[in-house]
Length: 395
Image (tube, rainbow, N blue to C red; front, top):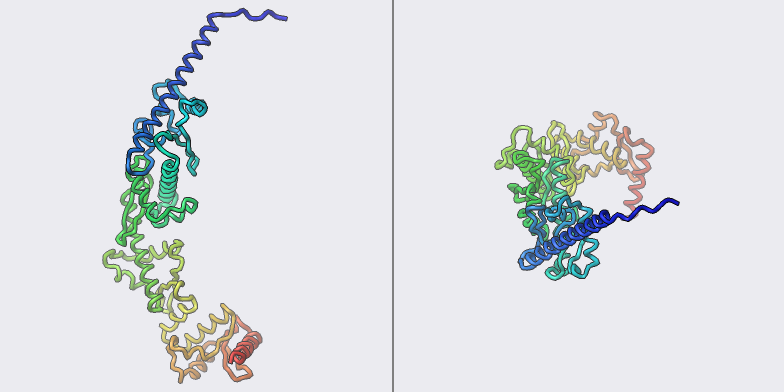
């Protein structure tokens, strides 16, 4: 067996001295952390408002200290690393001198410290909830600005955090706090002519671009309101060419309405706004919340003021879409603007000029029309007989 190494008193003393210095540094770190947490908690507990004010190094005046920023609070300790901070926090948790120092984790996984001497658990939960809401808002706004080059509608914010379920007014209160927080200084707000508030990050969208987007929002909102109103209250289509005249305050430039209609077609907020093109090539709009597509097509045909065209196109649509034959009594409805006394003559002319339109008569003598482009005669006759049987059963 080899000889054991000789005891070296100098090395032993050096190791003891290093351990002592390390312990002294650790103690200083613990005291600094505790001092800062207690000071911030005490200062904040005396304030009347609620909100997290988390800042880095020089500006650290928050009520709760973010774990990932603690290393910036310990500048006097040379070459201090985050793992050293974490290890000292673990030791502090076992030390009765620091039993008032507690930690809390947000829904986003961020860890914070506070002193329960000054902040009770209920208050801390309120603060952490505010931090979660503000973090979600900032992330959403920056993502919309960076990835979509879009503004973020304030009214849409509660829906994107269903797990937090902000109460009425809570989103606005947190936005007010964010406006005073340097971490969110890139988040700006802008209000449209309609009074809707939007947010954006100036890191990704400059002021001029935001103004352009706000103008687009105003135009699109105005269009949607007009179309929905016409569809709901008047059961009429809205001529796209008439839109610029009804928003003189915005004074859309040539082509601007069309460009915004194209954007609206890709926006889920306006998915009910549909368009149809008349025989004259005019684009008309309607809201399918109030007008069905088939009804909109009838309105388009009626504008042509050609009874044969109206009959033929309506029969074709019913044969193609449903599919079913069309009772000619349908065209006596005032919607079609066809003189009932002249209906038989119009049907005869339709059969002459539109060769795919065919006439069938049920066993009870009721006349139906169908288009053989979409519905064959045997099927049309069978369906017509079924409809008449159902009608007799109701009578």
